[in-house]
Image (cartoon, rainbow, N blue to C red; front, side):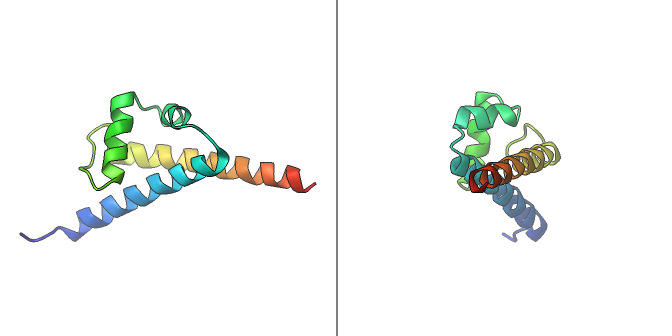
Length: 91
């Protein structure tokens, strides 16, 4: 069966964005439940997206464009917060 490279690229993008978000959360010591709430996901949606990160199927909810927006916004906020915390510890 032929693979659809555009879908594969989209999956890789979504996985990489979710991995960045998780890595920032890990680095800042933010628990999974708090990370889930920031993304406005219920427990099942969080589990579905975590399964997707581990090569599972793309979840239907929230839709991919919505999830990418949430991940981008949340990752940006975490990065800014981490930068501010780093600057305050250096001062």
